[in-house]
Image 1 (cartoon, rainbow, N blue to C red):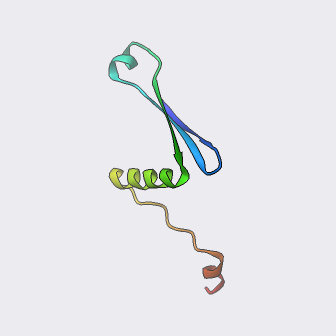
Image 2: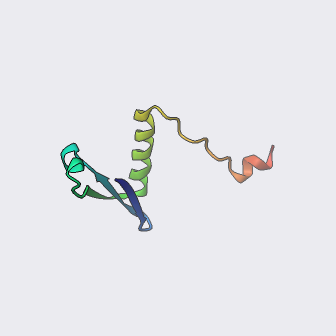
Length: 70
């Protein structure tokens, strides 16, 4: 089980593999769901998953201008 992604420029493809308990126990292949989305949609999904999982997003990187004035 797992996931993969493909970069298509302004869009991307996310493929997710899942199992139901019965298919896992019988050794069947996982189900695969493929979603095409914009990178903006992917970012919204990532932020949502971080929020519902109780995780905090990584800190934002400072821009080159901000680091210049340190």
